[in-house]
Length: 188
Image (cartoon, rainbow, N blue to C red; front, side, top):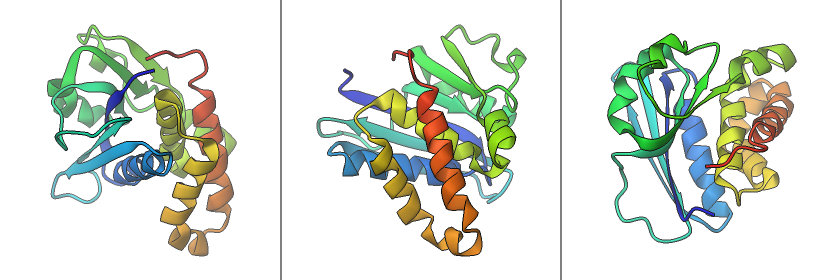
């Protein structure tokens, strides 16, 4: 098993990139791992490119930001130009197949995984939980983070939103299950 994961989650403001990145780091910490989360986004709150840098390790993490991602998630076409500098030879690229075209990634020779996050969210619940499918996928890829720990971190972080939309709790939990299921048979 890997000792250190450098994960870069990219998308647009309003997609929940920062929320999912923060929850991933929190759940990793609650699972006994060392973790760091560094947000990076433009001045626009919604619609600008948003990046979440997450590191998860079994040992101390030396520097909060990194240059090369081990896993790079792309959930918006506009983010493709911003993430290129973080791609190394062995970076695994996971992209939402509905939101990011294969054409925009064709010149990147890395291994790519097409995630049907938005499609699955819309078909089974609501598109609002697409980020929770990505969260479950990343937790599954890292390993050592249980579904229960992840759900607890999500529910604690989003408890205020559940007052407005109580059904969102069930949708988020189901989305995490779906995302974790997408990692079966995938090795990093």
